[in-house]
Amino acid sequence: MSSVALRTIILCRPGPWQHWLASRSWQHNNNNVTLYTPVLSVPVIKCWERKLKMTLTLELSVDSSNVESLKSGARKIISHVRPEWKQDELQYKVYTDGITNQLIGVWYNDRNSQLLIRVYGQMTEKFIDRGVEKNNFEILHKAGCGPELHAVFENGLCYGYIVGEPVTPDQIIQVPIWECVANEMATFHRIQVENKEHPILFPKIRRFFSLMPNKFSDPEKQKRLEKSGYTKEGLQKEVEVLADKLESLKCPVVFSHNDILLANVIWNNNKRTVNFIDYEYGGPNFQPFDIANHFNEFAGIDEVDYSRYPNKAFQCKWLRTYLAGYTKRAQEDVLEEEVEKWYVWVNKFALSSHLFWGSWAMVQAEYSTIDFDFLGYGIIRLNEHFAKKDEYLGLKVSC
Image 1: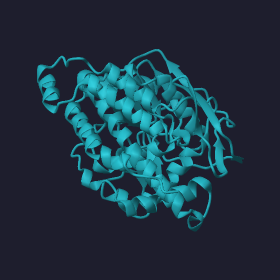
Image 2 (image 1 turned 180 degrees about the vertical axis):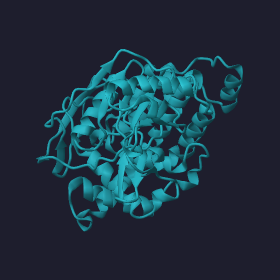
Image 3 (image 1 turned 30 degrees about the vertical axis):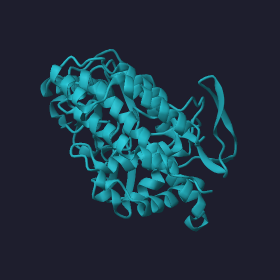
Image 4 (image 1 turned 120 degrees about the vertical axis):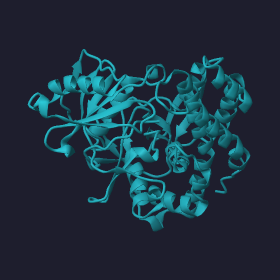
């Protein structure tokens, strides 16, 4: 999961369109598997055509062990990125909702011009490629879909701010917010990147479970895990079962956010626009995953309630809006058969979302210093996976 922040909004404006109708193949598990064969011509955003300013690289680290040391480190970063800002007049806001990293906003005079300084969570380098995250910032800024990355330092990033507020569980089902989210995700998925790699989904889950301790260093956590009935070996086997089922669907692969939880959806009420934030898990992935993961996040994090998972009627409305935006068609031109197929795909991939964040939480439970019950959250996600497994895998595409 990602840290919560408010940042300067940059509306997503597509560059030159080209129509892309191609079949792409990757070597996966030594088998040539065709993963993307779009039926329709999809307008894409070519994000490498625009030049960017050079990002500063600073040879310093920020101590985030307490608020004062975090502010002190932030001042050092700002002295390089905004040397004209008066150090003794800087203002700060520490954002406390994140459960992966620590985040502080710094501004001078105008709060909306603030810069965000993110300090990486302990041991997150074991499962997050920070070079990829930097590249994701550049890809999205080039495409007009993300804030500027101003600097990288030894244990973090400094980047722009998006004005707005994270959406709430009540807001995410309201018009026009959910429609804006569907269209923004469609725009995101049209971004064309060079050197597209394998879908990251199952390699990431395998990586998370490989980092899960054989036995938690905290005896109480180990007792809780044993009480849940889950074992590392059993969960690793479950990953392979699900991978076999989902990879056989041969779903499209696109550049995906992979973490569109509600805190990463910023709603600007004045402009009536939505922006996604936090790109550390971004990369090529099966297209239905982003949607499925987003629907799972309707349940929340602190007080998880899966009764909030959207019903079929809502999902189908959402998917029709998304598919119209993704293919640049009118909604009435989206066929019922298409919507039904995507409904089946999305709900099957909802299972992989539970395994993704369930495995992630098991790693965080061992290593993170953030005050959050990662183990409890991970068990909740795994429980939901197994509760819905038969129902979702039993869904059939009728067309």
